Amino acid sequence: MMSTIVAALLFAFIGGVLAQRPNIVFIVADDLGWNDVGFRNRDMLTPNMDKMARDGVILDRNYVQPLCSPSRSAFMSAVFPFKSGLQHQVIGAKQSVCLPLNYTILPQELKKLGYATHMVGKWHLGFCEWGCTPTYRGFDTFFGYYNALEDYYLHNISGFLDFRNNKEAEWDYQGTYSAWVFTEKIVDVINTHDKSQPLFLYLPFQNVHAPTEVPKIYEDRFPHVVNKGRRVFSGMVNALDEAIGNVTDALKERRLYDNTLFLLTADNGGQIFNYGNNWPLRGGKHSLWEGGTRVTAFMSGAGLQKTGYTYDGMIHAVDWLPTLVSAAGGTPVTDRDGINQWDSIRNGLPSKRTEFIYNLDYLVIPTEGQAGIRMGNYKLLLGYPGQQDGWHRPMNNTEDDIYEKIIYDLDPDKVQLFDVIADPTERHDLSSQLPDVVAKLKFRLLEYRKQMVPPNYPDADPQSNPRKYGNAWTPGWCKL
Ligand SMILES: *[C@@H]1O[C@H](CO)[C@@H](O)[C@H](O)[C@H]1NC(C)=O
Ligand SMILES: *[C@@H]1O[C@H](CO)[C@@H](O)[C@H](O)[C@H]1NC(C)=O
Ligand SMILES: *[C@@H]1O[C@H](CO)[C@@H](O)[C@H](O)[C@H]1NC(C)=O
Ligand SMILES: *[C@@H]1O[C@H](CO)[C@@H](O)[C@H](O)[C@H]1NC(C)=O
Image (cartoon, rainbow, N blue to C red; front, side, top):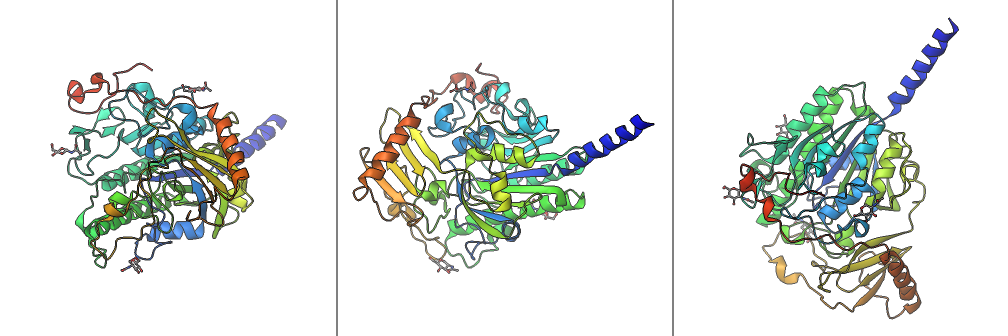
């Protein structure tokens, strides 16, 4: 009798604990600029994102790496790319490289907590060996692509298919816009989800990365934007927003929504060449300027205690793994660079982070290497901050050619210091005024540099040739 009661209580208790684990939806908006969302720019049409951001927490000082693979590696592993060899450029389709296999990554950590884990969208963390790919690294299912820059309708890159349903090459969606395919697949996952388990969805959409492509119905929603490229781009952002709306609707229909925590972040700043916009921040994608690294992000939904505000604490891409594991009720790993910011964000308390490395990438060509550190209010940049400098307003009503406005400063010996709290748009280099601060930050940066591993950036491997695998980019040509 007694044992039955104890068992019943225990069951109820465990049931209660399990019920609290929120579903987690982690959305990555590829190349979405600071000024490309409706809650910052009234010319954009993002009602779903605006509502989530305004009802949740806008993350105002959310930092990422200046490029795709490095940021995604940080999201998944909580390790700074300069320690995993991924600090230089992105992983090329023909390179025998992937996010080092010795890290347990976010979906693996959530699986340990009982989550069903699904990924729909862009991986870009290496695929040369099957062990590198999503379903071998903690995802129950994967629908999406391995590389970047592919066509939104044909799902090919460099002339070969890069579209996959779990392990199988997927040829069935030739001609269908990726945001439509992905949304259909995500809704399928939601509709077939076994509700006895909490759900983790990792949704790194293709929108709004180049090429600039969108079905006309989305473009037509921006008749006031005269500039063709910016008009199509605005449509791409709107398609992303619609996709997010459809995903939330599906969650609502299955009564999963109220217990779901959403995180949306861009992976880097807007690509100015491709009509993205980071105004008033300086620079864009590829650069260590704030426009390349301080990006649009918000959290919304289950577990947040304080909502409807803008959080100004410092957050870095490496923080998401411990933060989400904590939100899921787990105990985050502490042997990584990421800091658990869950209590800070959900209660509006000060950030636990006071510094981070923007990047440490000294390659053979000094003008390609980038180095920058943030400590407190100060940011030090050594050498070339990267392509895409300057301050650019959205090209909504002109046919201007933006290319001529982008300045490159290739001086590898240059030292620059900014107070990014007082001067968030980086207009006043303080390096000559504050030599002691420069010395302090430089010393700290050089300390970090001792932990740097050389960039893993090998030459193309001819074994990668998709012709060997039925004209699709396919794993199985390396052993890491
Ligand atoms: C994992 O691999 C990376 C890259 O090879 C290496 O720098 C790092 O020290 C390794 N980490 C652990 C925890 O083994
Ligand atoms: C995709 O395939 C089409 C048809 O073969 C080709 O014209 C196009 O250039 C390819 N695009 C990419 C990005 O590979
Ligand atoms: C969202 O759902 C509507 C209604 O079913 C559909 O017309 C639209 O294409 C969907 N949008 C996306 C991006 O999938
Ligand atoms: C376009 O951008 C300018 C700033 O360059 C802004 O003032 C204006 O409101 C925007 N919208 C339209 C429709 O022109």
